[in-house]
Amino acid sequence: MTRFLILQLRPETDASDAEYASILARAGLGAERTHRIRLDRDPLPEALNLLDYAGVIVGGGPGCVSDAPEQKSPTEARIEAQIMGLMPQITGTDHPFMGCCYGLGILAAHLGGAVSKAQYSEPVGPSACVLTPEAASDPLTAGLPDSFDAYVGHKEAVQALPPGCVHLVASAPCPFQMVRHGQNVYATQFHPEADAADFEQRINIYRDHGYFPPDQADTLIARCHAAEVTVPGEILRRFAALYG
Image 1 (cartoon, rainbow, N blue to C red):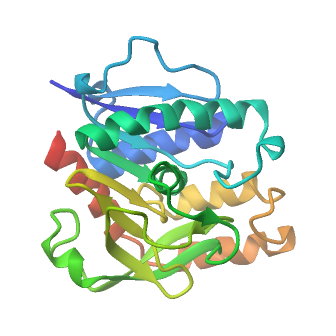
Image 2 (cartoon, one colour):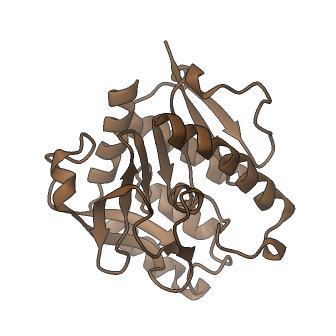
């Protein structure tokens, strides 16, 4: 049985553990079918071979790819360097990959695309997404509702479709919500693993990290619980089923 490699970036143990549990739940995977690495504390093994894995899933985190080097903490810089070091093999071999939020910035930056805080950031909470015409023929999005809500929260965003990518999902405040490179490399700006409880926890953890005014936390939590968010989890489930 080939496992999925789960790479996590969150330095807060409670947030990291909850994210991992949510990835397993949404993807329909048991822990025995994954190899989890918390990059905030554990380096990638030197002998890591991506061909040993059915696919790679990268979670979200508080770092920003577009921040200047001097603005990144040593941990953020190390995590970014390790993931960026994997991207040539992932895109070069078209190895199955699902980058969630931060993973879209990594993919776009690797491909030479523009990632910045110039526009398209979104506050924490549900965002109304729509499928593009290209989504009708993609195995992860074909047959999904034309519009659906997804949980988001990001300070930076992809500014234009990265070279060699297909545009699959958009939203009014952030055009590039999901893309595909090649046939097997995917990334989303939204969080396909998250449910309302996850976002309530993250809002409480990251209320002083610049994603939103801290006094809006309770309002944002209420918005998350009021939203019906199911389709993003189906996308992650399809990814695991297709490649697992």
